[in-house]
Amino acid sequence: MIALDTQTGIARLRDLVNAADVILPFTGAGISTECGIPDFRSPGGLWTKYQPIPFDQFVASSAMRDESWRRRFAMDAQFSTARPGRGHLALASLHRLGKVPAVVTQNIDNLHQASGFAADHVVELHGNTTYATCLDCARRYELTWVKAQFEAAGHAPACSCGGYIKTATVSFGQSMPEAAMRRAEALCAACNLFIVIGSSLVVWPAAGSPCWRSEAAHASSSSTAIRPNSMRPLISSSGRTSGRRSNPSSSIEPARIFL
Image (cartoon, rainbow, N blue to C red; front, side, top):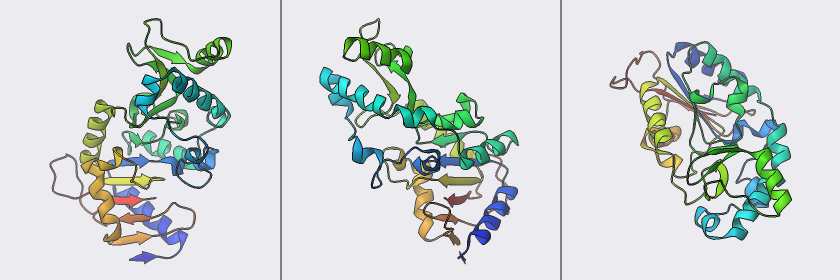
C-alpha cells in the first residue's frame, strides 16, 4: 500500500502506535534539525564545516586535541541553545504512557533527556557532546570548566590523572559502547513496533547491528510505504501488528516504521 498524502500516513502510524504494546524508537540527526542542529552529512551539515577528527589522531597529537576542542566550542551556540522539538516531545509522551521503555539514538545532543526521558532510558550509541570524560579514568568534566581551562592555557586541559579529556562522544576509530549496543539489541528484540526517525541507517558501526539492519532491509519490500512531505525520507511497516509480542522469543515479527 502506498499512502500519497500526509494525513493517510499519520492515520496509519496512529493505528500502529495504538496497537503496539512495546515501541522502540531509533533516532538519528533528522529528528533534531528542526531544533537548530544541522545534520552531519547533508550539504551545509556539520561535517562539511568541521571534518571529524579520528580517534587515533586525537590521542596521538596535542595539536589535534586542541583543534578538536576548538571545533567543539565553535559549535557550542547550536548545541547549548537547542531545545527538544516535536519529535522528541512526542516520544517523551509515549514514554510517560508506558508505551516506550527507552529510546535508542545515534544523536549526541542530549535532547531526549531534555524532553523528559531519564538519562538511563536513553541509549546513546554515539555518546553525548554536552559533557566530557577522561579517556583513562572516565571522570566526568563539564564543558564550562573545559572551556575556561582551554581559553586560559591556550590548549586542551588534561585530567588530574594525566589522561586526555574528550567530549563523551564516539569518534571514528573509537570503540563503540558495548553496554549500550547490547541494551539496544535487547530492546529491539523485546519490542513489537520499531520506529526509525531521522536516520538513514547507513552510519556504521551502529547501522551494522543485526537487530535493525534487517529492519532497514524490509523498507523496500514491506507492505506499507509512506512518503509524507513533513517526514524524512521513508516510512514503512511490515504491517504485522495484529499479534502481541510480550517476549523476545515470540515468533511475531515487529512492525517497522522509518521516518
